[in-house]
Image (cartoon, rainbow, N blue to C red):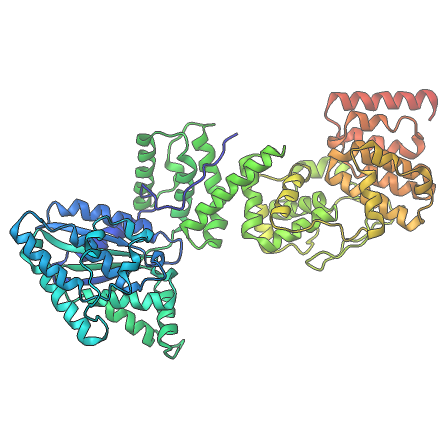
Length: 630
């Protein structure tokens, strides 16, 4: 069985999303002398891949630096990681100055002179309040040279507050960049990530710090953030009026005054979603060269407009399975996740975790079956609750078969198998979450051909049912109980009166002491209506979960003996269990009973039996009835 790897939320080491085109466009703006200085926005929703694009921008800068006039100094910062005790403005300034501090040649007179100018600039900031407190924060510890900056601090700094102080800082910073000691630096590129995660105060102060630097030639900023979220933060900070009809709100005008242009990170297309799923699934077990070839092939198909079926893989290989899985998941995930890479990656991680836990609990399902159930659980949450309701009321098998027939058409087996025409055991009327009612059958009714009416299935459920593979109720019930526990949803049959729930649990228990604790006298004392309800419950549950038949069939036969008036209900319940699910030991339980009463049950089971031990057991019972007449 193939498993799925867990994927880190860190930026991808390899471009799987064709984002290099975006990164190259950002780099074009950075290296355009006519746009110097510049602040570029890189806008996208959370999880859209902005940080991955920034990593590609760094690669592109390194590649182009060889042709630049001097060194391109890259400073990466994340304002949401700033120490809350330190002003965001001072923190950003400290990061830029800390990076520059390491560029002075202290052995050279020119470098020493530049360092003196640097010291004067440092004194412009109120480090006593801010940067001294930052010396032990995680963010500043990433820059060893900052210790030298802090050594320059005095306790009587000039003020950066107010326009005069800011103008003085701008002028001195521009002079510093033009100083001969830093002539080997052609550009300083500051990559600001996750600004949209910050509180309004941090957003505005960070933007104000950027504005300080933007008058200096050679300064570039790339601000990766959801532009709408940043604008909302600005609006909250400035308390500016909101006009939903106006695209250029005061908050956005403020932002666009600092950020000259915004480059959007595109959401994944349908092809991108399928390719991304395939490449994530296919990474495990492949060496780098083979994986790189797959990535390249997907890039080529993206340009040519081809599909992933053009990728040649060996039949019955893990990659072939991954192609199929990606193709199956893409339609719903593309629509429901809106082309968001992080949500797709999290879905695959959750899928792997679910399969791992289920397997360790003895619930062995194929990866494509788990994937289909995960779509229901994580994407179609209301439909998931509906399916859990079917599980709780022991209608899962009948509902799934009806749903599959509506979505995919009746299967040949459903049309030709005589037992498929048998109705489910009578059930107490139960109201589902969707408000539909499951009608009870009269015990004396003759079996009628199965029909699959529109039972109020939602369009999303029908669409989900079209996803392969077809799911068997008995195989997936254990997984659904597990998934319900993860979602903190109790699976309780609301159609079974509370006074009968403990009794039903004992009659289906795998522990003999529980079953034997229910005496014949207890069963005889039940009101007839309760006995009928209990029979219906046991029949439906056994049809849904055939693994309990060893205990439930015995209990049904006990009820028929204890309460003869419900025998016809017991027969209907036993007839509703599919012959293909019957075990040999279950068949033998009919031997001591009357053929006239239970002969139709044996006939139904015989028509669907496929295993030799079961067929042989049926023959044994038939011979016993023929010989002894009982």
